[in-house]
Image 1 (tube, each protein chain N blue to C red):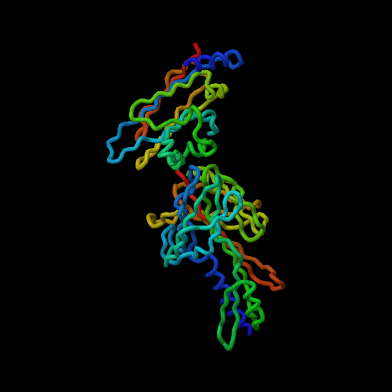
Image 2: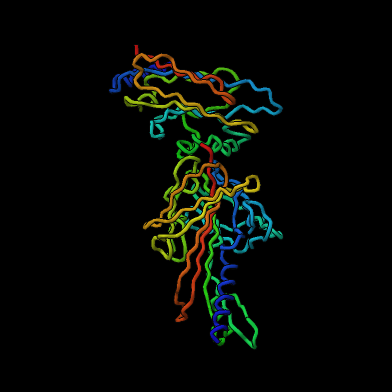
Length: 173
Length: 272
């Protein structure tokens, strides 16, 4: 924790102002299926032209008995793979993570994070894509404006592989 | 004599038609996966000539005719090849990041037709055997050249373009849209070169696979522009087959002959 605070302090001293932050909730539905595997999920911020402004998370099976077998299925997150994944060297610090259990998962993106610092004022789309082994695939999107300008919380509901996805833009103060 | 010549012409163009892909039979290479992730992967490829896409029902393609080119331009040997009656299969191990080309492109074939003792003779072979067997010296011989490429492209990681470096011979594919970056509802542009120059004014046919489960073929017909570029928008997700061909005259080793060049490729459109 101490390291985090000092990093934030350095950011203050070295120029970039503390910015608004984000909180993203990703609902992973409980599914009653014969064979269940936790989904692979990617979350990223896209510009209106679909280019990637920031990678927020990719949850996948990172290692299996020392092999990188989990990366075999990353391409099934097919929009993320096309827009971001295939140009990245996996794993990505602060982005890669293990698969998550059903329930509500929260991603907090602090104002001094690389992701937030990369956002210039403008229109963006939060995109969350989920794909499940021997299951389906779903992608949801939330358009938003940055900085927050006091926007209400934005939510969208998935229908099959994702539950409710919520984006909260939290003003700096 | 005039009738004879006409007959000969008809005979030789029939042979050419059979050799090319103008008939209903469609040659194709279908990889198990077009886009892959990870450090190294295997794909398995079906190779066949059939009426339906992509269901083997006519003839296998000889696996010995396959060349695999890796992203760095080197050739990769195929593995586990087997030739069935109506379909061949082989595997390709990919351990370089980028786009691989899997192709039957090779040296052109030569066809000859002539009359001998009142019998119509047909011959097929290479330029070397044409000379060696004295086929080119047969009285009234009509020689023609056919060059056929059947290709597909498979990408591990991010798509790359090194395997599209043109050789300047025959019909060659150039990406405008990368063939492993095709999505439904988005316009796709590909480019064709003929002997290294833009292949303008060619008719290109694009067919979605799974025709067994449709009443209509769903064929798209487009023409290449002055730059050899053609554009279409795939509506159905799944594998697609595209084909085009060109006919002309050429002179090989001082022999004037008709030349027929065809190009066929398989790619997939992913749903958005």
